[in-house]
Length: 256
Ligand SMILES: [Zn+2]
Image (cartoon, rainbow, N blue to C red):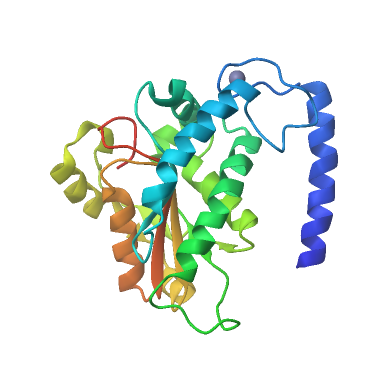
């Protein structure tokens, strides 16, 4: 496992260097061209990076209480906040699909997730724990067709990689014509989320006695993530951690 991981890292480092030569990276915040070969360290130019770090620092204090059903996240999402840098990063995550952006946020969420996992009340003795299992609430098919990918799935995969965890698609949308969460108020979102998501076949075997991390790019009321947590706990998951890049108190843009 470790050997194949370091071989993969060597392959992706070579690939990234070649990609940098062909497509010089641009700052996710301001669009300026960045120096090649530094893209794995950051996705921001120095100015945008400073704005991003200020947003992250602010969020870290109240993410410390993350426990079972706690929410692990990096930044608050507020229009105009921190020069709008968190919004731009979320936009990239939702619509651009650049792998380095997912790697960037996954590397920063990973230590917060391991802190949260270490404080779970259901923790078993050291050495007996299975790796964290990462999953996600899928987007609507129309949205995936439009952007060409599912950002929550990519985030869950990047986090599984960064945390040496497992990845599994455990949740699916029902065939019911559920509404877009962003068009609903808090109460409507909870009801809508309940009918919109169910577990996939065989998910129960996979989640039994595991600590599952449900990943999404943006959390507004938490209705979607909480519904996923309910399903996983009912199916026998030992505990569930919710993980998102940004949390917002306003109703805009998120699945819930
Ligand atoms: Zn910039």
